[in-house]
Image 1: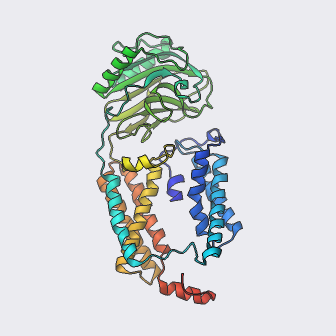
Image 2 (image 1 turned 60 degrees about the vertical axis):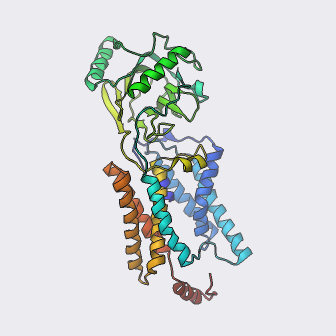
Image 3 (image 1 turned 90 degrees about the horizontal axis):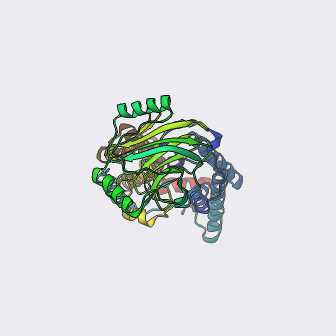
Length: 442
C-alpha cells in the first residue's frame, strides 16, 4: 500500500531539484508517521537497525522518484517522518510483545471472520465504481470571487504581471487560439474577441480584491454555469520560475482548498484546475499540468479551454496538456471522504492503495473458504487470481481509460500476491515454532 500511494505516478514531468519543498506541514508529518508504522510492526522480528535502514531506503526511493512525478512534493521532512514512523512501529510492536506475549506481526484470523472479507471486498469495489460521472458546473459556488493572484485565499501570492486577459462562456476552437497566439507574437498583444465576461479592468488590481462587483459576479457565475463551457485567455509574464503551491495566477475561488477554477504556476510549469462533480471541489482529480513552458521575464500567451468534457491547456498556441473530465474513474464515496482529514490528498495514487486493500481482502476470503494450499506457488496463483478479479471488476465497471485500467489491474494482482505470500496455516506455524524452539501458539 505504501508503494501504491507514494511510488506509482499518475503523470510524469522533467525531474528537477527545484520541486523539493522542505516546509514542515504538521498534518502531513503525522500522516507520514502513521503510514509507515505498519511497516515497522512487520519488521519487528528483525532489528531496530534493519528497520531504520528499510524505512530510510524505501522513503528515500519514493521521494527521489517524486522529483519526476506530477503534483508530488518531495521533502526531506517526508523522509524523516516516514523513517520515524517505521521506527515507532517497531518500538510499539516490541512493547506489545513484552506486555502481552503475543507476536504483533502475526495476526490470527478465524476462518468465519476471514470469509467475511469477500463481502467487504465486493461491497467496497461497488462503492468505488458506482458513481455517475458528471462533468458540468453544477457544484460551483456562487460566493467565490474572481481575482488575480492568490492572496484572496490566504496562499502565497503569485509573482508576475498580466498584460491582458478575458474569460468567455464558450469553448474556443484550437485554430482560433493559434491565430490569437500568432497575432500576440507579432504585435506584442492579441485583439481578444468580443463576448467576454470580464469588463475592461486594470490587470494590476491589488491582490485580495475581487475583479468584479457583486452584480457582475452573479452574472459571471450564471453565464458559465448555464453553458458548462469556458475559455480563459491570459498574457502573463512570471518573475520567478521557482514559485510553488501552486501560485494562483487567475483564480475563481475563496477557500484555499476549494475553487471553481484556477490557473496556477508550479515552478516553470502551469496547472489548470476546474471544479466539476467528477474532478472534485479542488479540481484536482484530475487537474491539467503542462511540461516546462515558462521562462522568467518572458511573456506567454496562455489559453485554458473546457468544452463540457475535455479540459485543454495551450501555451503560445500549442496544446501542452489535456484531460477527459468525463471519463469514468474509481472514486471514494462522499460519505467516506467526509470522515477523512480535509488536507489528506485523495487522488488516483491514493485510490490505488484502496484497490490494493480490497484485493488483499478478497484473496483472504478465498483462502478462508477454500483453504490455504500447502504449496506456495499454488497460493501465489490463487492470490493473483483474486487480485485479477477485483482489478478487472474495477476496470470494467469504473474505468474508461485503458492506461488507468491496466495500472489498477497490475496493482490489484500485486496486492493479491503479497497477501498470498503472507498467509500461513496453523500447521506451518507450528512447524516453524518447533524448529525455532518456541511455543506453537500465536
